[in-house]
Figure (cartoon, helix red, strand yellow):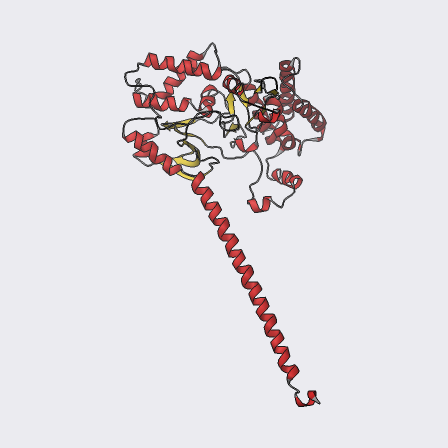
Amino acid sequence: MARALFPCVGFFRKPLYIQARFSYLHMKYLFFSWLAVFVGSWIVYVEYSSYTELCRGHDCKNSICDKYRRGIIDGSACSSLCEKDTIYLRKCFSVKPNSQVYSGSWGDLEGVIKCQMEEAPHYDLGAELEPRKDAAAFNKPTKGTSVEKFKAMIVSHLKAKVGDQANLSDLAAQVLSIADANKDAHISLPEARSMWALLQLNEFLLALALQDREHTPKLLGFCGDLYVMEKMSHSPLYGISLPWILELWIPAGLRRNMDQWFTPSWPHKAKISIGLLELVEDVFHGTFGSFLMCDVSVTNFGYNDRHDLKVMDARYIVPEAIFQEDVRQQHCDVDEDCLYGADCHTSCDLTKHRCTPEVTRPNLAKACEALKDYILRGAPSDVREELEKQLYACIALKVSAEQMEIEHSLILNNLKTLLWKKISHTKDS
């Protein structure tokens, strides 16, 4: 009877249900749209904040040029940077606010521009092992210092950095030659102050010590402690860069395989690998002392179109003498407290709660570990087994082992010989 009297009740209920359903979907859509906008805005804000904090190259340029105009510093790049505006900063690669790194150009030359920002100098095993300039930077040498006295300052500084080497006077002479930026056979006080600031940097010191070798980029010019280095056409050594949101979801094993997808042919990889082995040879008891490679990650290396390996970031290649001096003062409770960079481990002496000065792994072992997946992938079948055997023997090297230096030299020579024999008859060599 009720149905007969109100036949349209069901008709009205259905549209009301549909309307409620539509309203629910509409609210759900609005909520997720708002959430997406919020998350997107937060990501943009975080990325922008991170960029503005890390990438302060123009502040660094303004600071350097202000000191140049006031006659405090001078150098071969000062006029181009501050007057002619022919040095351009392009893409930012800085990973720390106090060390600005940019790709750029200087006229027709492509280069990498590096500049130091103010921060109170300190030595901390968990941070940088080189002092940064403070508010009183560029105050050495003082007015009235003779060239001979400046050279004595340089020799004393180099001795503290790399130890008492027989040929430090030769390196000091090279420093004075570079300091004479305008090549007028006279080193002005501003030029000397620039060079003194640069000598405080491990990377610049390594470039000087290995400038006659082929594995460090050429110094193109400097102004204060801003300097321009040769740019590599290929960097990092291998690997692809992905947005951080993708990195979270890709398994580690797949990620390692992806890094090997875009690498040169195996003969080219062999030549690049030989370059890294030669670099290890150069810094191990080299002409101007020994250096420790404390971060042998692929992002710190690159190569040119001839597949010659070059160091792109040498901040963590530190003089062994100064490393040992500083690490002895480091307080520790466990071995993990005695780590500098990513790769320089020492042990903790629990009787004194101080780190011991000797690293546990030599440079060669760390280099072989970085190369293992890179050089084994695509290796010819007739050398793969022997190559793998040599690499694992290399990775197992320990500083504490008896006759370590003999084993080090033997494995290094065996690896270089094995790779050279395979590529020496090809045009890739």
